[in-house]
Image 1 (cartoon, helix red, strand yellow):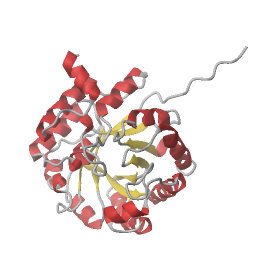
Image 2 (image 1 turned 90 degrees about the vertical axis):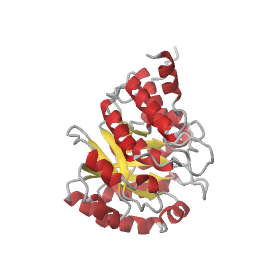
Image 3 (image 1 turned 180 degrees about the vertical axis):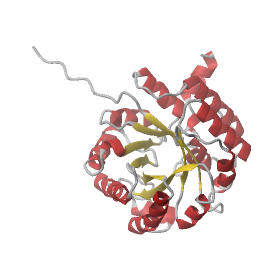
Image 4 (image 1 turned 90 degrees about the horizontal axis):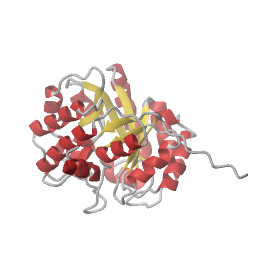
Length: 309
């Protein structure tokens, strides 16, 4: 008698890192009023999110959508059972962050592509890692957690394919530097499930899988399939953006971040806990979508709002 293949094992719970207020809104062409950004973050908290990326300290010349991050942080209520995170690109950004309340975590970012690193932050991968070392030291002295991002883990808009071993090397460098978690970003959204698995397997040989997060964009409609693939390998942290906020700057007119509502619906349907209220997320996403002047990018949100359940 032929034995049946064993079913894949998935985590019992997944932590969602909500990146809409930063990674989402910074890629929307309209600058969202400060009051609406604050309302968005408070709505996300009420929906159950406890890890929210709320802004960044990048030069407002380059990212005007994030210029009011200090005002947003000052207006937020403390979150004792979670944390607000901000992106900090350099020591000047750290100077600004240290003047603000409510920060529990900073994020730093490197790329797995030399071309992307030069285009995005005007330096090599090695130089970017050098630049981040004093930022990490200062964050740790402040008692802040440090999270590392790796961009272009499944493809680069300038180089095309990116070797998975290079992704592993950059992730390992960030982990050794003191990042408690490494978020692996499919920046262009070109990945497919087999590549997603091989990339995670390569990185997990250098960094514990428990310290890895998946940040998969949905440019080609592959994000949920890719997330399902890496959940099988033990990844239990997912970055997502309510209403699918944020386009893909490297593919005109294409979707960017995977929608939090779509991720939560899939996980709940698999019996995986998130601690999030799907209907509340859909309502929050609908409001911010109207603010930026478009329909929600979440298919799940459209469905649950249409039936009112």
